[in-house]
Length: 559
Image 1: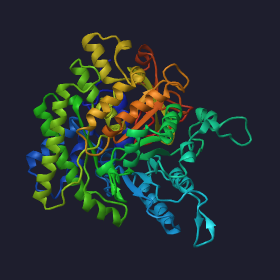
Image 2: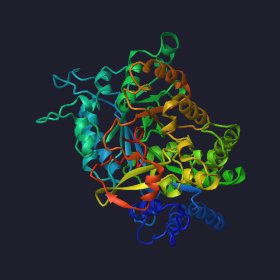
Image 3: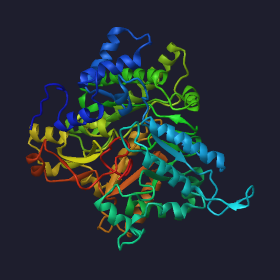
Image 4: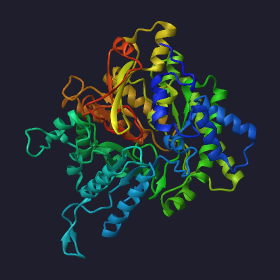
């Protein structure tokens, strides 16, 4: 089972090397070590950072202990420096000019390779009178579809499909339509006896409403205070049932001093109240770090790297530069948390030891960003931490993504390559270590799928980690298929009440019921089957939706 690459010895699997080769390898960055050197040179050039610290930073990335976001990796050594993964936009007023501006800004952002997120709550409901023309408002849903169609036509940065997010306030009059906006199994395909869901099971590239867009409902302080006395309410419970059935809409929680932070990136972990804000992502790989002292240093260096990134990254238009100067958000995240737990024989829960490491994560990132902002004479970041889904970069690192548990011990993964969809069989590296080192039974290792029956533990884990994160966490809780014993109309009430109780401890929440979207990028397979076919690459007839840089789970960043 041991994989060893002659050119990239830090990779744990051939799949990791394949992802590097077809997504990030280019002239001057032929190996992962080359890319680490080039990237640190690109980002840190012009700072006053000593050479020994730069060398330490290069080694940290080369050793896969800190990995910047995918756009950093892609643009390393290239003439343009669009290092940012995503942009946060707001529909600011319901006018022709604003619709045109949103379309213009979205196109420019998508063409850099960054995803976008837009809050449409300011747009009037469909049918509202438009006094200036004597007509009627189209409502926010056609605007969402317009942006989705732009995304369908744009290969981000010329290399990947678009990642888009859309949200609407829970009190908006068009919420009933928004709830059903991606209810593909009720949408007939003209000229056939099939629904949109039927067609997309066979070919996920078949165009459907908002199929490039992840949607969520915003819940504010009014909802929270009403829920304390009157319960979660009809809109929330309808949202819960729809999510448990189809996976969307998700939930965006914004209470009290965070109430205006309704803007999200496509994967929902970065939050803002300012139109044209920008993500700036990188993740510490806890699975490769041996001590809390080493962890502290990697957090420090990762924070310095991302802060300097706010001085070097190119941006798509002037307002983004202005908002970045004002907010200077850092999205320092974590990945490999479940691998870290597995190494210590812990269950999937935030243990006292993990709490102590998370305190270091919070305290050191805050301290370092303040000190270096003062040192460089720039504005201090308004926020420092956001945990992204880390799709492709967690594959490179051979570790578990974000805060997620191991998805499955073995699975088949689909991915885009040269405009065609391919697949490989994968054995999770952390699971394989357990099997190799301790003789663990592959059927008994905890995973997203085995925990699908224990959603309360998943909710608690996310809430516990959120205590240390000053923006959001991108996470998807897997659920059994709709209609099963554990996920059906009779279970919705209990699930919704538990989520409402946890809402003040969360910033966002997403579920993925098994089989709820066609062309799932990951499919669990028996361990022995995967072992027999490791390293084999083949073309897939079923296509998968590549959102948020191949997240591998669905829900949060696509189905």
